[in-house]
Length: 261
Image 1 (cartoon, helix red, strand yellow):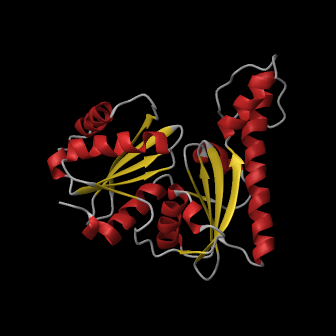
Image 2 (cartoon, rainbow, N blue to C red):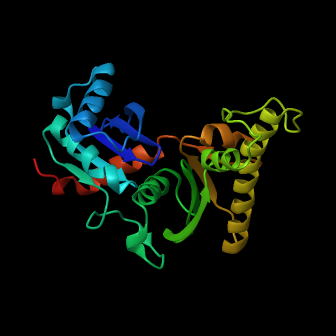
Image 3 (spheres, helix red, strand yellow):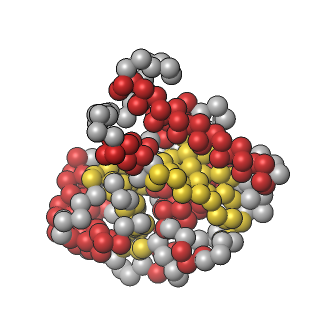
């Protein structure tokens, strides 16, 4: 079994996968806490494993992707304390198999790289990947399997928080699908605008990308808000919330010889 960790600004995703069957044994999220120590993260990981009856000694190795440098070391060290093995970190020097054709390849976020690795393996190319977390990122891989770049859009919650923080009479609300598009309540109207508005944005961006490329692509979405927003899109978009975990497993397999036993 492999422990895969994706550190995001809002949540940290922990996944355990069977390397032989490629099946996910569990996937859990905890809140990203900038104050936690390595030992506290080790305790969090151990608790998750205990819930799923996983013995740390049964874990062959681990791999971590992080977009949040201030907590990367604590999470990585916490995993290594628990596993008593070094954990691979997605970054320079790892074999990816992805042809990156952006202006500054070193600036590509680890999460986007991991998503591209899994996306190409699972869905082929050409491909658009929509990752809906704190930010909504859109990555484009063309018909020659080249990562061309993409877009970064304020995420659903970030956009909504910006609205409520700057409009005194608008309340904080739960992000969920309202009962109708045209809504007669303030809360319903905010929910409709947040979800259907974001869905329309994604539809529009996908169609503009197709126009720019000169051909249509497969589109896959992942991330915490994908299951809420994507069903409201008009274009056909697959939802795969295990995409990053799959990508981390693929990267582990490509690079496990680098892991110190």
